[in-house]
Image (cartoon, rainbow, N blue to C red; front, side, top):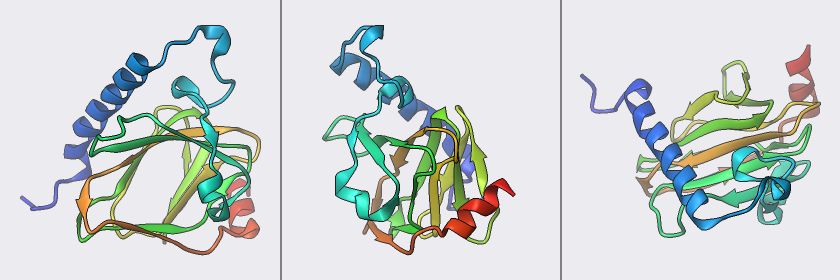
Length: 173
């Protein structure tokens, strides 16, 4: 037995949070099918992600789906085709990390020193605290994922270098 829960033991918590996010979204927003965003999956595309644009290659959109005072912060992040964020690290003195669940389109997530993982709706990636990584859309597809920021202590984000065109283009090779 380890003091650190394995990823397998955490999935029920992630799925419970996903259901909670759907309930929060459904209770706060009512719109008919004709008004649904073209991209962004069930949660919709959100607003241009201008506050973090400097850390993205291409345009992204952000929509918070958790309640503002909820300790588990959940955003739906939508990337236009070829958009990706820079390499980055979610630091935490204790706890923390991120879970990504693809809800629309096709994208990629790569943890440092590991091959990139293609993401399709329903795919889940766990990014432990302190691990350098990036995520973004495939070349010819919009991509949306729920980003769950797991609660922790002493949390901060460190934005690093952009994913180079050579690194990104190698995904299709």
